[in-house]
Image 1: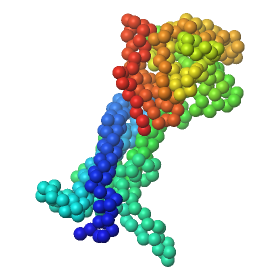
Image 2 (image 1 turned 135 degrees about the vertical axis):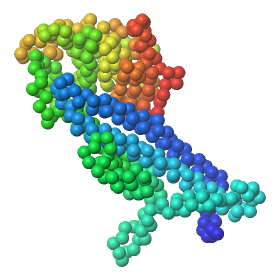
Image 3 (image 1 turned 120 degrees about the vertical axis):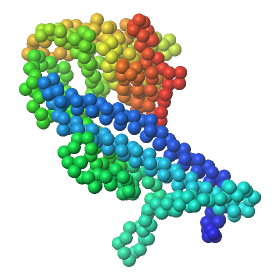
Image 4 (image 1 turned 180 degrees about the vertical axis):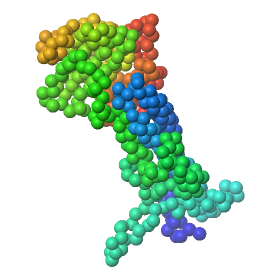
Length: 454
């Protein structure tokens, strides 16, 4: 029997219509998070585990890969961290499933109470509450965090309710409500056979990560993967011989890492190494490009400084003087294209995505002597070239209402991703490059380019 206060709340404030709307909102929130976990995190975690396993196999061929500083122990630890991340994703899915089940049972119970209070004639099946549903409702109420009563005479904390198990997984702090997995058969088996965990690279316990939130688990994974490729404590220099040391940039103003945009690629077909970089704070209207052909010991090298101007758009509507466009980000899409994101010259909340054909860049580069001991590659003798007139209209796309900030591209996956300046919007493009058409249709979006808000 509801109290007088609860009866007033149910009939006057919550109502059956409000309860239904609130229930749908909660279910939608849970479903959205669950889809992200299932479609994104699980796929990434599984792929990463697969690649790490491949990498561990390479570490067991020391005659070929020891020079890279790869250590099997470090890779194994990263595999464990990746598996722990997958396990935490599974744990989160289970929390969502249980929470949704208990929420639905609780809301249905409230609905039945409202119907009875209103004396409405309804089917007995609708108002019937099963014993299993009562168990779920009791579990939902029991999972409320301990209520601490405020008492001035004691040092106890003020009243605090924690009604949500899910939210704690999305914070960078330890879990306050741990999963109830004491009866887990696998955990029992490992406790009874602890010898399996000794010096075993295949079987390990995730109990060390039991208190980790999903965010903490992700951070742990990032650190573990980073350690694989951290060569600062490894003497890998003894395996290499320096032929040439090229100085490409003067860091006079001590630019921060966040302002430096750099991308590198090796073209295996041409035995050519290429690098492009810019400083979005100081040289934001220029891209420095260098290419080194390594077919022979006497390497041939070329370089250039190039920019884009507003004439790229060939826009007759805006009769403004021609000016250079500010570079926002760059990354090699493939050995044939360099992807560049620039600001729109006339619209503040729009940007331009450009697929620069490297063939044009290489044709407009100049050779330089790599033997010079005091060589600064991009000196005053290297002219700046505006390559906008050389680009076809099919190699760029204006991203309207997209204040772009960073890009990530992949030629093998034929995809490009643009992140907004607010970090709240992502636009994903499917790229279609036809080798027979060369520069035609280098950027092709889906009929409804995927845009996600986070």
